Each structure stands twice: as structure tokens, then as C-alpha cells.
Length: 468
Image 1 (spheres, one colour):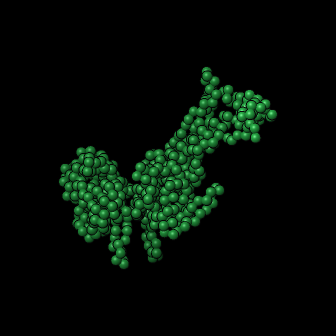
Image 2: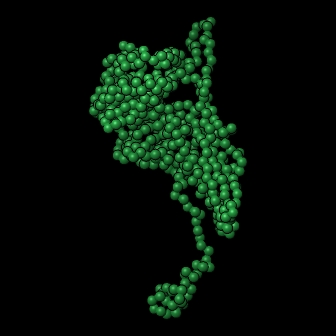
Image 3: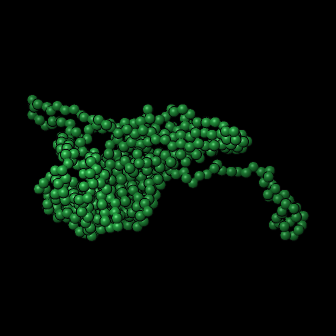
């Protein structure tokens, strides 16, 4: 075949061109083209699965029953070389010191912590021995064990960085450990001897008042969740005096204000006027900008420190893996801590790591069809991919499990529809002005947030290894 060039001569033979060249013909042809494509677009399962609740006034208040106890916080540490110290202000994470703000006393307490190191397999505390100090895991992982009925030790909990136990021994005397704590990995542990606390207690009236307040709060009738007890009677004999009761509420319930994501889209008037066939340039610019805004919205719902799910899970609903990667045993532990789990969320690489663990055991999870995609499940709960969940430099990540909906006291999304210039639910596109350079500006705004109605609606499996 002979090809021609613009000179009208065949490129090799120098003979005259016999037909119209392809480049010239394309000048008269209509090119078939795609709409602008974008790699950033993901499935955004969280936005699809969350039930969105209309939030008038821009704020959602979560009312709960009065709770006398709070979840044990995790302590944070600093180190200088191999020497590790607890940050004094972090001691307020202990239930005993919740709300205590005497910096001098906190500094004195922090200075009395003693550093210890344990090798894998070492016993940190032994059941039946005298409980004489508060322990906190600064680094590493340990198992909390009790004696089983059939001689085998039973796993109560897994303790890791920042977890602590034994804070009750600071205000109780002659107590013994009811469990054994055994190091799984190398552990750095900081302990506060029991005798160090009375010394400071005798010197500080503020600390004495704090301890009295703690004891009063602990003595209040409460259920196993720490909520103010509702007095009831059952299986009683006739004419028995029935208890009187009422349901007390938190006086300062948490409020979730709607968050915001915004940008200004600029379009040249010449582009908007002249280059709108076969695709409207302004609409395509809007479409891709809104896609990016929705991606940011899902990222914030996962990672925002004020309302993001990773930072708002109750500390008692955060568990650690038994061996590093997520195993079927870990997933079972995660879902059995709550009723009616609706979905898992995990990074795609974390899902792949879980699949490898299932393959290693010869387990093949079922799949379901969701929105045209095949999604693997565990115990009939779908495991949905979400690349907004971060992966640390140590190649670890987290797996979230959610119960959703108002009726089930789950996790809900918050938005407000009917706003001015609404383009999509709770998203507005507002024409701002046209500049002296003929640039049209559009203000694009999305309003959103999320709320966890009760603590067990959200659980997290933390520090999941994905590189093994």
C-alpha cells in the first residue's frame, strides 16, 4: 500500500498522489470522543450505604441516657532514646482522673511511673498475686487471660499501645489480680506503684476531692454499660411494693454540626459560549468537580478528627488482631461485639490480606451482588472496599464494622436538603460573578457529617498487618 504526504507525492516512490490522505480527510470528519475521564472516582460505598438524616438548623444532637462511667482512655507516651515517659496531661484519660486539671499533681504522678521491659512469653502480672500497681502498655502487645474450666487459659482481651489496667488498685487496698497478663511481643510497660498515690493524695486537696467524686460516681446504681439504672421488678409476689424509677439523661449531650467542603469553579465565557457541542463544557466541569468533592466528603467521614469514624469509635469498641493479619477469628470477634452489623469497611489491600488468611485455612467466603459488583462477605456481612482508610508506614490498617440507621441506634449520615441553589442533595452550585477577564465563577458547596448514636454501633479492628 502506498501512503501519501501533504506534498501530493508518494513518500517513497515520488509518484503523484492518487487519493485523499487520511490526515486531510480527518479535517472533514466528526471525531467520536468520550466524556472527560477521571481516575480519582471510586465506588464510595460509605456514601451509598449510610442512611442520610435531614439536619435542620445545621446541628444534630445525640441524646443518651445518663452515663456514670466513661470508656477507659488510652495513654500517650514520649521517649528520649530508650527512656519512655507518660505525658502528664494524658493521665486524665484514666477514669479516676477524668476532668482533673491540676498540672502539678499530674506531673508528680507521671514522674513516679517505673519503666519495665518484658520479652515475648513473659508474665507481666499473675492471677492471684497482690494487685499493687497500675500498668500501662507503652509499646507491644499482651494477652489478658483467665483460667478456663478445662485447664486451658481463656483469652479475655488483647492489650496494646496505650492500653492500661489496674487503675482501681490506686483507691482499693488488699486486692488481688483476677487475671493474668502475658506478653505476646516485646513489651515496654510503665507502672505506677500503689504506695505512690497516697503520698500525693495526702498533699493535694484537689486530688482528694477528685477521688471522692470518682467514688460517688462509681457508687451510683448503674447497668453493665454504666448507664443510670432503671429500677424494675419481676416475678414478685402479689401486693409487692413496686419500685419507682425514671430515665435520666445526659445534661450535656454531644452535638454534631454539619461540616463543609467548598471550591470555586472558574469557566471562561468564550469556552462556555462557543465550545458546547457535542458536550456542554460547564456541565462537564461541574460533573468532575463534584466527583472530587464527593471523594473528599467520604475521606472526611472516615478521617476527620471531629466526626470521622476512625476517631469517633468508642475505645471499648476497638480491638486488636491476635496475630497480626486479620483472620476469621478476628472478624468474628469484631461482629459479635454488636448486634445487627450491617457492613465492614476496609482498604482493598486489607481485604486482599484477609482473603489470603482465608485461603491459608481453606475457607472461601461467600459473595453477594451489590450495585452490579461482586462483594465478598463474612457471616453474611459485606466487606466493602474503601481506599480512604489509611495504611501506615508499617503496612498496617484498620477494618471498620458498622450498624446503620436511626431505628437500630446505628451510624447515620447528616445533611440538609432544600438549601438555596441546590444541585444535588445538600450540595449547591451558586453563580458568583463574571470577572473583568470574562471568567465565570461558581461556588460549589457540600454540607455533611456523621453521628454514632450509641457506642456499639461502630467497631474497629486496629493495627491489621497487610504486608505479610
